[in-house]
Length: 73
Ligand SMILES: [Zn+2]
Image 1 (tube, protein in one colour):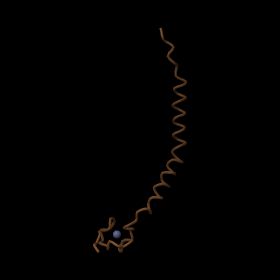
Image 2 (cartoon, helix red, strand yellow; image 1 turned 180 degrees about the horizontal axis):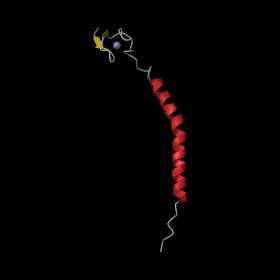
Image 3 (cartoon, rainbow, N blue to C red; image 1 turned 90 degrees about the vertical axis):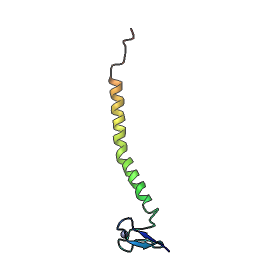
Image 4 (cartoon, helix red, strand yellow; image 1 turned 60 degrees about the vertical axis):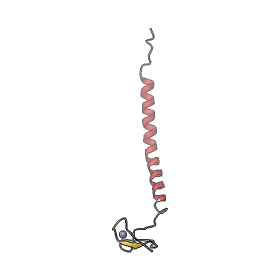
């Protein structure tokens, strides 16, 4: 059994410990933060997508309204 330092507070905890004894940070906390990442991504998409679509539409509109090159000699 070896001791691993906590990533947050640096307290040495046993390798088998699930959480830090000092700050209760999950030492082996893999997977627990994965859902948070996906929620953040989903929220970013939900809020970002309308803006992206609007930006694309604005760009497309400005391209369409620009006078097309009819100066081919
Ligand atoms: Zn800690």
